[in-house]
Length: 250
Ligand SMILES: NC(=O)c1ccc[n+]([C@@H]2O[C@H](COP(=O)([O-])OP(=O)(O)OC[C@H]3O[C@@H](n4cnc5c(N)ncnc54)[C@H](OP(=O)(O)O)[C@@H]3O)[C@@H](O)[C@H]2O)c1
Image (cartoon, rainbow, N blue to C red; front, top):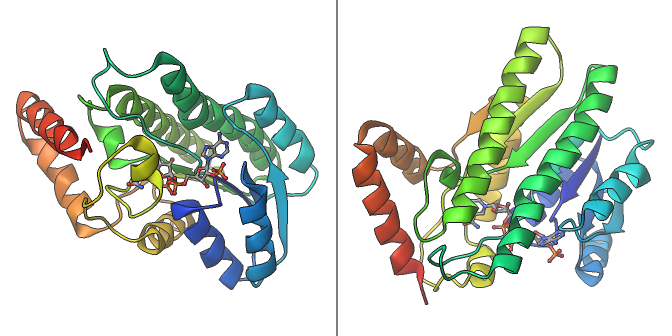
């Protein structure tokens, strides 16, 4: 088995790489930090190839696909992503466009290209790392939440299309709440938010992907949060989300 993981140098991506390497899965890691990927190449107990890419650049997304398309990838994990915290009127436009290019456009491009190959072979797994933010509007982190809504809904829709076709190809959205990774620092979220471990998120995602779940909510608090937002009035959920985002400011 061969798996391509975007954003494998830290957090959830790194934990996914470790879980798969333990199972002897051949890895292709695609991120910017070459030194970190080389360290993983030396450490992990499975063959590891590395591809240096900046997936905010559309041409790098295509170049990544061209580089690996004949390697018979069985699993694509779209994990690379980051967040931008703050009122929409105050956040930097360029940073937010980069975030959307990575969190939305790169996921769209790679899903499209690999799904076509997987359907031709009638085999393959896609795991898109969305977020519990994908179920909500996110005042205080508006564009990040909107982008994750896109990834979640895209994945759910493709899951149903594949089911209708009777395809053996699988696609799954992993929707964690807070996870202890480098994500918080990059987004400017102050320390102290509790969350599950990257390992817990990775294990739940891989399990759900293999079981053909459309959506995976790792951890009890993520599941409770999901139920809460489903049954509470939307206006109240918006206010609660805003209060949570406001607390995250450092
Ligand atoms: N942590 C949370 O609380 C949480 C909750 C829900 C969902 N998520 C989602 O989980 C995913 C992984 O995040 P994480 O929490 O593991 O964060 P992280 O520890 O900051 O890891 C992010 C990964 O994305 C890669 N990356 C960032 N910019 C990139 C670029 N331009 N091109 C290619 N790779 C890039 C980084 O690698 P390089 O720096 O080497 O490029 C790194 O490996 C994201 O999609 C995030 O939205 C996180």
